[in-house]
Image (cartoon, rainbow, N blue to C red; front, side, top):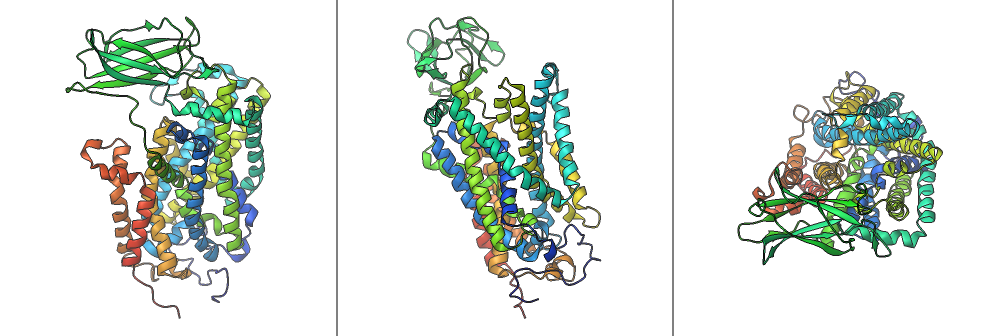
Length: 612
């Protein structure tokens, strides 16, 4: 091969190898047809999705301003663009997919270990996106047949039959497209991208117009900094232990939307002062009640507080129930339910790690797509144009439109009921034509993201397990089945769990893989791979029995420091049994894992023989 060429093709016949099939074979020069705009459209199609729209929600709720949250999203995507472009280089130069790229550092068989780590995360994301798309179809059906919402939920699933059927229908659409092959994905992304951008801009236009201007809309973002209920313990000179309740309902011109409330106290199954009615209208940003603990609760260690808010003095409950707990310790001190505010620098670094983690998966398997690129310039410029710009714009749209909804819909009386989910927002519109068009747009957005981001990689990864038995299409089916079994609607139950367990958690696992790949390709091998050896047992990448123990040891050692913190965040370990250092370290898991793996691998990697 001429080393001055930009592309390399497989010139040796290795088709009889057990590690070869047509789906994993290097892309021919003739098949490398994706230009800069195809790559950019790919990223637009993947970035314009419901999770991106909701991405800034947790950051603002944690105390960031709207511009800090959107800026963190932008910076995170600029950071993750670096490993994205670096790993994409090998795909474009040699035409190989991600699992084959893994064979160089990990060995032909050893590549299955990091490939499966990537695949299982993708299966989780596939389930999440399929649930979101199915939810859009369900809301669309409810506009046409309102009685769908009356169906009783299936107990063990927490879904009614129509929600389940909508989820399975959207699942079947995804699988149907992936079975048509990679060119159908290119077609879908190219045509979906402009449609998705128009829908996002239309939502933004509605928010600015209906919300009284952009400045007025964004001003409401400060409402999300304060939880609607703060409960603290106290001591009353007359009655002893007491509770202090501070309520923060949404207000218009200083007038709270919540006008009355009912408070219930309990500890376990024992009820205390149930249905205490506040006699005066609520004042925003002011402690509303100080309650003495009734007999039977005063000697409890933990008291649970429930608050129901009403928009008038005796109407129906107008907000989701608010709940909090306060602890009374033996030394008489109390712990406030609201906790202590996190320093901004710490919140920023933690959030930045989460934003990088959002696309940590694609920063690894980007060769699955750039193997079809016409040139390195096309893949670099396409990603630069498509990824950080679209992610930042759509995160901003999510912030602005949600704040506008708070302004427009006066029945929203607490921030936790604000419609960050665009499906929830669009279901509020009364015009059936608007709802139908919007829900179809959301379904297209979710479909375009899901197919490219969450099916292509695991399909190749599962194929890599047994190339002679598992094709790309079979791998896609395996991905789909796992995506159902994880019950993704439960994974998305809380924003905190979504950002700080899921995103950071898988970043800690995948960061080291990226560090090893980049160190191996750029430092150890100087951007040179022997294509035939990636597919045969006699080659230089088979190592001892097909596994490279050095790479696997580095992978293990790079994950271990972040594992205790992840188990604490996931609830598998009590925080008291893990040193605080590991919980702190976990917050920066992607960067820590990447850096440790990069340095260790450079130190221990076996250098290849010089090229002749």
